[in-house]
Length: 125
Length: 288
Length: 220
Image (tube, rainbow over all chains, first blue to last red; front, top):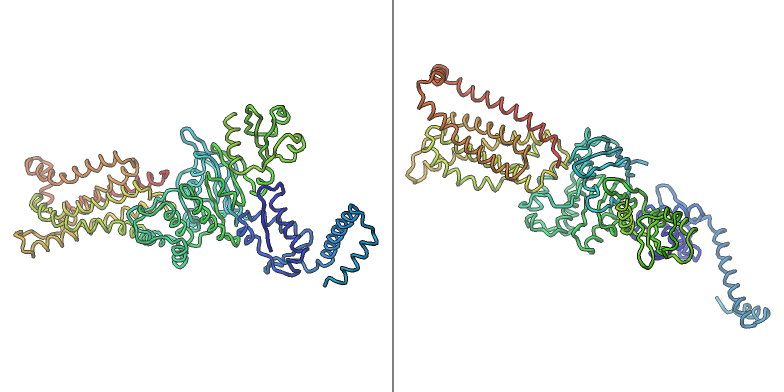
């Protein structure tokens, strides 16, 4: 897991952490059920206040990304597959929109795009 | 939430200065930074907590107990690090430890050895021959070797270089891996606190200006800069420590959303660091 | 509280070492200058040195700040100070006795008298008076200059006090009070030391109470 904090960013630090952890989960860098560092450990490594990491984890937990098991620690949510799938679908939709936009700018027709998709679907493993 | 320290209506005056803390509660398990300019009352407050000086009125409770009635029990659980060495100049660290260790009921010799090695404290030279950094590290090693639950530090990083200061902060950070210890750290070097403090208490001219969590401070306190025309009665009320110069004004506000709403794109809004907060607050107080 | 006594002794190790040659010097000189109580004056001199050394050092060092930050009560600190003074008196006596014995068995051309009970009692009384006056004054004024002056005055007083009394009594042998005291001593030789000890104890108690009050109220 990789977390970097931008001091100059207008976003509050806890939000940056939330965002980066969410991304990591969605992209699969963090697997469901994986153990996350404790809030104090994270605070120490990032050299920020425990309150900030606590807040980040609280929000992530509220949104269903992570869950805390008393006495054991904080883990990436297992029951997240639906949510994750949705998020991933969203990502794909966004990417497709980008492709459609590009295509329209270059005057590529829908059928050409379809053909490209069919070809690549066969090729990519 | 459990408070490691509770101060109520604490008053101490002497000629030219009065300390008046209405209420100060430090939650257990966190690092609280105590900042303020020199002479603001930080050392006085710490001395009052340790019962080195006598209060005029008010109440101080540590671990839930009155700090005068239970001073012996309380001090057994407190590790202290003061600004100056104050230890016996002509003795070496080992001898000093041999004198001090017996006073504590939960002295941990293994822990002391561990810290001596970790901090690389020389044991042979007389205390007065140690460098400033080594003296501080030694004080800290003593403070950490008797299972103290509350560490009180008065300007421990003054006179130390940035490299060593970061080392010290990392050490403190490492202590906080569970919530059994609490740290009170007074300093006028704000950059240190910004990195590790969970709560900040800003004291000025003997009074508490604010006591918030660092997260809130960093997210809401801002420094605003813009053209002078934007200052009117309404906008002035949002700011403190306003400085108007030939090319514009700069001020601090703790109300980011309001400022965003009232001011237009001609202003620059930056996150306020603790040092900014201190400077603008002091400026504001000296106006009034 | 024993930790406090241990602390003071540990701090004084250097002084103990210096005191040994000094005791040799004292034993040779004082047995001549103060016939009859030379050992007492020597022992008192050594004890006084110890008594005065630590508080000044701690004040200068600001070590009081550290000691008072430890889990220890102010009353305990004061109590330890009074008790340790008697340890100093005992050390002084021991050193003087050893010094006298050493000088006598050495090839040096001196034949000194040995220490006796009188010396012990006089030493204890003198040390009691010293700390009874010194401790409260020291903690009340806590100022280098003032303390220095007090040291000088006190030292002079206590060192010349016994001889002054002796000479005065010898010079005014016809005085009724002197006569009464001599009669008392002749018939009941133990009454004079008893009087001395009782007065010293009274002094100590009063002084102790004063010092407790002063020290407890101090701001460090």
